[in-house]
Length: 400
Image: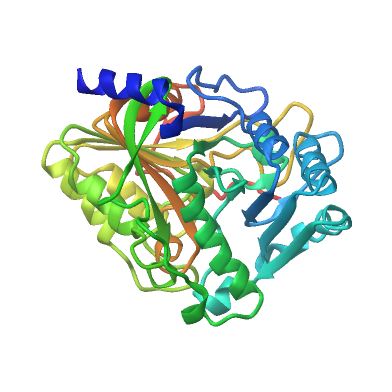
């Protein structure tokens, strides 16, 4: 009754500016994926960008375009926004400039568009791996989708559009700090104070498909956040440790090792195993890109833990021919008890939480978890996954 009354009040009073969340799923061509509870990101991006009248901030891992593909019209509306007077700023990661260098010059050639390259390795030790768009300080898109044509047509991805000034303000604070650091500012001086950030203590009510839910945000890495911002790995562990019935996970990479290092990080792995021991049914899907290396042993071991099941996702090659760095499940989300969910830009390996810029949306309420639960069910029961075989020697898949 209280939830129904809240929805009525939010809809009846425009001055309250009810926040809204809509989920977006990238569906690889020639696959049966595509939840009816999700939209497609390309059109969502275009609507956001076309609707901007003042400012547009894009923080991306990299940019990769191809003539005739789905990102081309997105880049066109970015240029059009700048041409009509919208101030456009773009941040990209230096480690991926080999990819970005083809698209960035043409994108920033006109007026009102400025780009900065951030070398996050020198700042936090990792990379700038967040992927988000902020339009007019009033709405945000965040998700696993890179600003890459393949992320719109050849890769399975999950993201969300958040229509909320509070969410836009918090993402804007991250953008401003990274913009300053990309311009040479010292990390300690880059972060301003954000009033009442969207954290566990101060969530916001939003509508998902007309139903009211609570949501908040979390970011990585811990040492490079404004005061009061929740830390992604801490919130992820809280979700897992609080699970009572089910945990559903779909994530590209799963590793206990920091990149290029030998020391193991077992906190997340232990939390999943402990969940299984307390009779939580844990079901996980990893991409085939995770297999064929030193992580196989740990993934096989996890798949044999009590109440834990792991499947590997693998998509067939497109009939048009092999496309490098595509046909992979790049999603990054978890659903707990069908009631809580986290959608992120981070893979599940230590560097992403401790050294890399990442962002996550946390939703509480069955209506908010339902789209991700539906995506998971379609994947878990679909034709592209197979259970981990502990006796199998996995061969690395072709990426290039």
